[in-house]
View 1 (cartoon, helix red, strand yellow):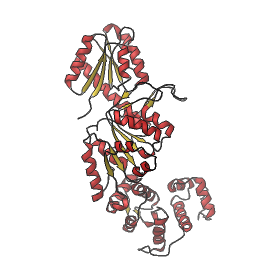
View 2 (cartoon, helix red, strand yellow):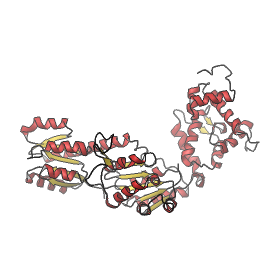
View 3 (cartoon, helix red, strand yellow):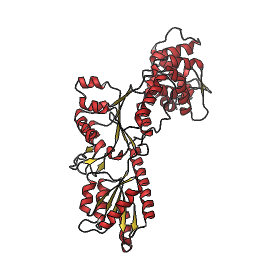
View 4 (cartoon, one colour):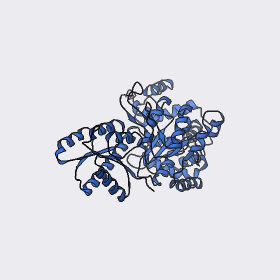
Length: 463
């Protein structure tokens, strides 16, 4: 069942709060808390994340404007609708400047109020999406990137779909480049939480001293550069799915705080004293052997047991080679800017024979390079630049003109010289474009041109 939207109603008239709470909860889809005073509302806001707050402007001691300022400072994704009398219109408009989403006059029209709440919820989702994109977390949506018909992949997808409908924590294990995040997206998109946020955190890419702040947020002044309060990603993901990628790289101190959060759903912002609670489903992933990490004292055993309620193991690309033709076709279409190229059967056969230590990610990069370097409408053996193991085979086969690639192997230096010279000719000796296609700096390219004494036939090598 989908999580209900959390609404906070704040008004010093008990009849108003009772009526609003009753009407909203009878509609279904809403869970409503009520407060008769501003101080009571602030206490609730410190322990729970609300989607929308309905605030009366005039209340004794702590006014609705005071509560609005608190929400703007401590829970910026919460959308605020001010409840106002007709004579308070000027004040209500001022609250918009302070961060309120909208205002509704009392006595309110039920249909108007519901429509305003609906728009406020939509705006909150837009704010969350913006936050997710700002952190470069919303990278791949949907399961459209799961390509393959092999039995190994079908088994993984089937298991992911089985567990998607539950609230069970899932640990996705697999080598780098096997598509762990795609499976996490699949689980989210086929779960009851699919309409709420999917927030991915790459635990390996965030410095350890910042990871706790990213996850749980921080209060203003909690450390040197904390100029304002910041919501953590667990708050952004409230109601949805939190994906902890490379969870095996989290340090022991942060592991302890993560375990407490997973056990209770409660957390404290860095520098804060109030405990807050959110409702998230956690899916994690790792390329490490966490059992070995536990044995060697780098990972908490109790955290492993909490994360690993259900385990999904992704196969290596070399163990599902029958999917390579489909993946190659998909990546060619994805990387082609205009006309879709075809791949030579010999080149495809070579790709199918290769052992792919970098898995699907390596294949994608190879195809991207081949699309950029190939001349004409066909990608051939000479366009495949992978790693030295395959480069020996592809270049020897392409240069000799043989079909089976069984000629004498070339040295790595010879292969590099041939490949760089071919790339330079492809881009008419434009060093900037050539370096970009090869994935090296222009300075590195210049040094290799000097080293291999490469020269342009028409003397245009000064680009």
